[in-house]
Image 1: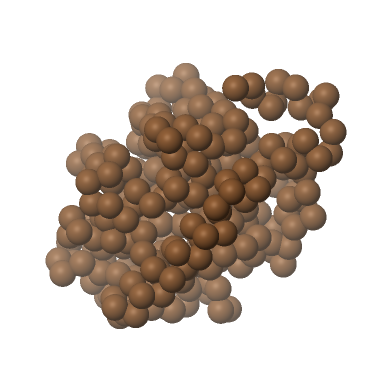
Image 2: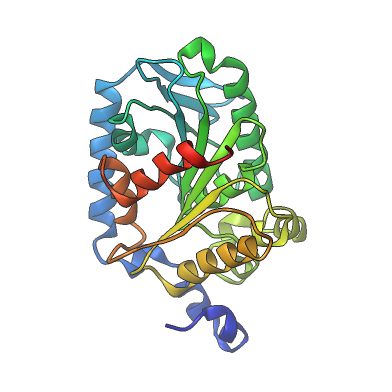
Amino acid sequence: MQNPDTIWSTLGAAARSAAYDNTNAVANSAALNQERIEASAAYRAAHGGALDLAYLPGERTAWDLYPAADPAAPCLVFIHGGYWWKNRRQDFACLAAGIAAHGWSVAIPGYDLAPAVSVSAIVAQIRAALDWLQAHGAAHGIAGRVIVSGWSAGGHLAAMALDHPLIAAGMGISGVYELGPLRDTNLNQYLRLSDDDLTQASPLRLPVVDKEFAIAYGAAELPALIYSSRDFHAHRAARQAPGVLLPVAHADHFTIIAQLREPDSRLIRCILDLERFGGR
């Protein structure tokens, strides 16, 4: 398995785009996504309560909150993925099931999508969402320690949010932590990455946040995603920042998040450990 970064200059446009094309890399990705969307609609209907709570004006900039019975229970904030240009918070509700089985609250923020807004603007929206949760979470039954997580683009956004004062620790799942190569792919037709985006919103280019941050990825993912996780972990470890590197055997970019629906999965056990030990 070769890191595409080491041969990037030799790759043509099609190969560069393919290096980050998770959808085409997983033959049944459409079916996996559809099953998750249907399961999330059922979960949202069964656990409706504090849904569609706006943190900024607009349809997408809102929270879905699933408070635990105990307001002091820890809370997992989960940020959805979709390469910053697709998907909705509503379609990831079923991922709350695994950690909710341990008595946790779950909070899922939405955000505006590229190209209507920049990646840097999305980072700012997530911070605004966390400001809102810090100010208003207790009124909705969420007053415990907060662990931030996210998948794909959400893994990137979780890393960018780690320094927020509300956050005790975090986990990135299949994240992209260096934005530079994406400007050379067909994703940039949506992202329109600027020089400022690369320097201000690439976690690998920013000072390390000294909070625990676990970095998970699927062992069957595209090499570009695997190496992004490995490189970010090495970047943090070189500065003595805490956090495990967690490869998930046999998992690809889409099957890995199914672990969040399983109360005894490796990802859920890691999140439980983050709450027990992270930031202590």
